[in-house]
Length: 385
Image 1: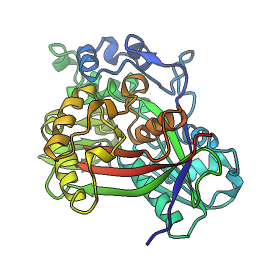
Image 2: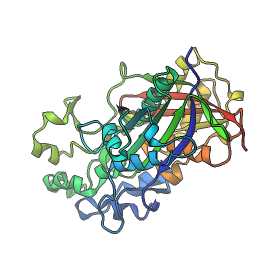
Image 3: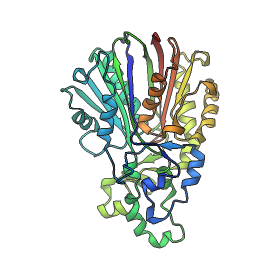
Image 4: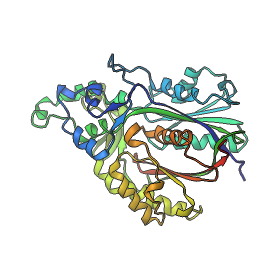
């Protein structure tokens, strides 16, 4: 039996002012000097109205890197009986690190400058925020740590700026005369992803005053045994197989925008709900007690409002038809921040005064990298004083 663990503080950092749909292309730049044909279509379907970028609107250059953004979110956790100089375990995650090596978390530790502690990086796409949280939870639950911080962050804009696609555009200039845009699987994601960081403080006892979130369980399931790669960066598809960036010469990497984020949209649409909702819940509900009547808040991470109705259908198919009025998401206002999304949702709900002792939360985070899913159950404890 593991010891109970509580989320006692939650912080988020969203850089600069919100960027609306008409400002996006000016901030990210136009590939080949021409506006994207996909932008309006993608934005109409995803429903996102504003998001944040680390790109400074005055200079057009990043105002901070990923490690700095993460550190800023983590600093926001300080208060009450917690200071960073007493941190036992730091777990940081992202799908868009500033470098291949060293690991993202040690760079965050360096930015924070807190005394030596255990530092762990978890990698992946959207799900790595949940794997970071699970490691931090297990560290405290096992008694290895008195406290732990888990952080999820994304600086997707660093990969989406137009200059990253200039070499590909120039190398395909003739072909692009008739189709003046980069491949849809790359351009599509330029209008889907945004920047942000969120962090949670886990401790072995609840807050003395106010509310805490007790972590009841956190289940993570991969379906990579049956599904091909769907979303990737630093790689390209060759003869039906994913080939990593090191297999390409430097010039070819640039010409093919190998480092860009790409996604097979048809594969995504056809399979994301089937595997990450229905198949995942079938396994989870065989070992966990889950009833619609017991869920007060459902926090789903999804990349687009397009998926809201299919997600509702998937929940119903899994015999967990959570009514829409119990859903909480801030996608349309704060954008799709990948690994940071679940932290940014929790921060707004936890600090927004809407929770009451005894309420139960179900959090859902999928990723399409090779189709994985996480569900987390939380219980609100404490008082509202």
